[in-house]
Image 1 (tube, one colour):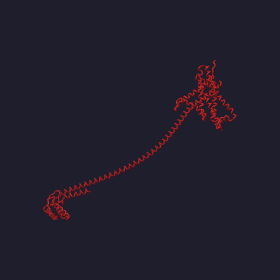
Image 2 (cartoon, one colour):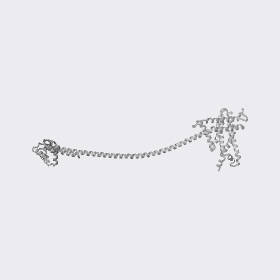
Image 3 (cartoon, rainbow over the protein chains, first blue to last red):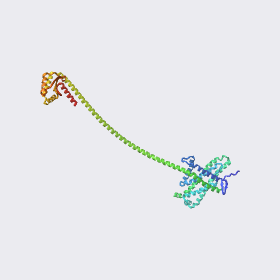
Image 4 (cartoon, rainbow over the protein chains, first blue to last red):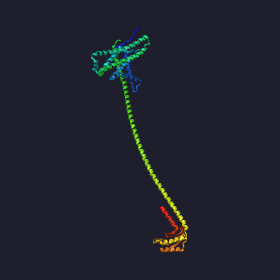
Length: 228
Length: 253
């Protein structure tokens, strides 16, 4: 039986840097999104055309979702969350294009994104509350809970990375197995499910990141304000 | 399934660059466009609200002005009605005055016509009476009546005042050759003629050349003409004198 290289492939080395196909695909997706944004937003008019309406719809939807959760700092957080959603949705669905594999099947990519979320939570929290006020929430309601807070920070980051990786990897694995077992057109319904799954996983990753960031922003003084 | 550190680190860099690029090329311009449109809509709504307020103000002003106009119109109509009433009253007064004047004029005219008619009737009556008296006296005229008139003429001469005689004398003296004419309706008897001439010459003291003639217009009686003086006692001239006197009295009335 021919061995199928399912996981990320190393394409080469540039000195100490290892170049994998998932990294290249990630860069390609990022480039595509950036180029499309630069080109499509170049001509803006007071009376928007269809493309502008779609772009405004995407941005407004993201902004509204973030504003509903973080009304005070949505302008700072929205670009990050919107980038996560757009990147993950595109990266998850790019495997439908023949010759491309989803970069989110690579644990290195999902871990990198989860770590970014981890740091962004602290970054936005400290920016909004200040360092001491932000760190203080780890000691509330009781300093004894500090280890649990730390464990929670690590585990939810790991969960973010593993959830996305596991779902996307398993989805592609199921499709590959069906292709091997059933033939050329058998995995088509599963690929349709893959579309939904990719979008849902992107949404879940983004919304969890948003909730974590919102928790970081609102954990300190606001919790104290709301406490009786 | 190994964690590739290069991929991990480069993916972080890749995503941070993507965040920056999307913020720079997608989020900021599109948000700015949306914000600009929101401001424009808010401006349009504010302008529409201002326009509505202005329209409402204008409507209220217009209604107020309409009410003022209505009031002014009513007042003007009242004033015009009063003016018309005054003008009508003035015209009626003038008409009444004109009618009174016309009435007075007609009354005066009718009065004058009545008086003229009465005068005409009186004249006519006088003329008729004169004609009647003339015809009546013509029928009565005769030598006897002539003799009576001659006698009366003689008595009148005898009864003349000295001033009257002086006047008769001056009338004769004004002529180079004093002459006088005695006219009668019937032929005079010579003794009557002589009696008359002698009395006159005696009283005037002048010798007069006498002429005698008959004049049927006298009807009956005698007439003496000396220069510009005339002495008469005849029916024709008396009737004429009577008629002229009556005519003059009617004309003067």
